[in-house]
Length: 214
Ligand code: ADP
Ligand code: AMP
Image (tube, rainbow, N blue to C red; front, side):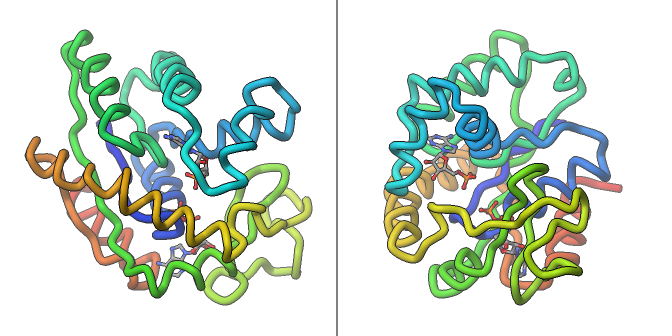
């Protein structure tokens, strides 16, 4: 099963993608996580990507597409995967479609997690991410057991640089301009499913399970 998560930054794509990955036993592939791991390890890719990420801009396709195609070519992706944060524009979607069609494969579901812009700044200013394992919390909606500490691995929780309100505004603008057209793109392919992302995360997940099947 090959799934794409669509939706604004902070809509809950990562939260739902992790739950899908657990339930269906497929890898959660997040280009944002791959870039953040590279930044943490100080790689050349990480240094380059950071310049764009900190401004709320998309990392250029020349850097993004190859890391994604390499990742989904790995063995653990043979039975499918859930993509979170890719594609983010029409050219990326076309590259993915071409790569899959060479293998006689296609995307099964593109799930759009709908959340209005008014809710997004609040979601993102309250998001806290683990510096070590990437687990995500929210100060109000999903607080960690101990303030500032990851429940899973005990490391520090941080506010991502790109979750600061000034950057969030840019990210939303980029989303509307570059990423939102993918909703129509996947609608036209007959694989688009929409869920109401403003509800409780377990309710959102129940809707997704209805779509994907038990
Ligand atoms: P995305 O991957 O789309 O950027 P996340 O999954 O990281 O978004 O979610 C953004 C923030 O909102 C996180 O702090 C997360 O804990 C919180 N969150 C996710 N889903 C919900 C929900 N249904 N209700 C309330 N908060 C949520
Ligand atoms: P995310 O973790 O999905 O919110 O992504 C964080 C940031 O990483 C984005 O704001 C972009 O700067 C960059 N990024 C992640 N995925 C992509 C992508 N597919 N194309 C371009 N930039 C990306």
